[in-house]
Image 1 (tube, one colour):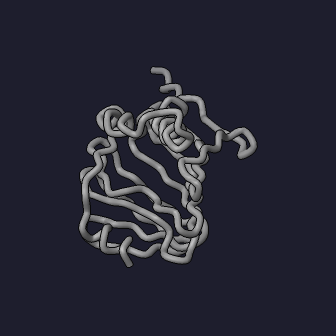
Image 2: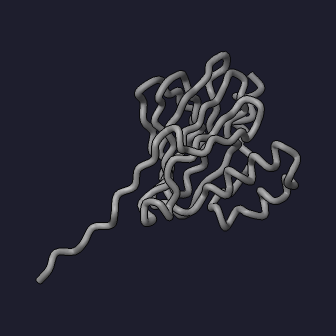
Image 3: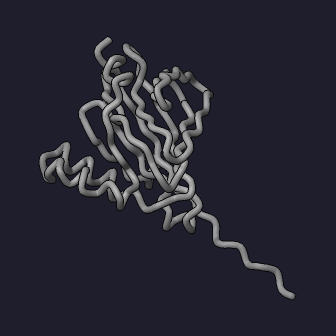
Length: 164
């Protein structure tokens, strides 16, 4: 009996990673998509400057989302709770749990974000950038909910946080 051959590994140099702007206060660095990892995970790095709105309330049905704070302070809606994560903190949001995230007021956040299992999501981030640049209709984001497993909703707790 021969051993099972493992899938080839994947690596990307920081200088080769695609960097997108999905707003004036947010950069997303695309690190590994599902096709790169044989479906194991999808990984990006999000830099959210002070005042960034971050990601609105949403949930995923097919994957968990993990946040690791590289630097700064991140606030995350998890269900109806608002958590504050600081440098070195990790949060895993399971499928179906409503969540949102943004830097804490007056702070910035540099966050490694991963999804497991991975689904091809890099085109979603490219769509966000095209919408920001006025090259795509914002309605395309809603129309892509099933494809990218992003399901948006309203959260009174997150609205109250944004209102101060």
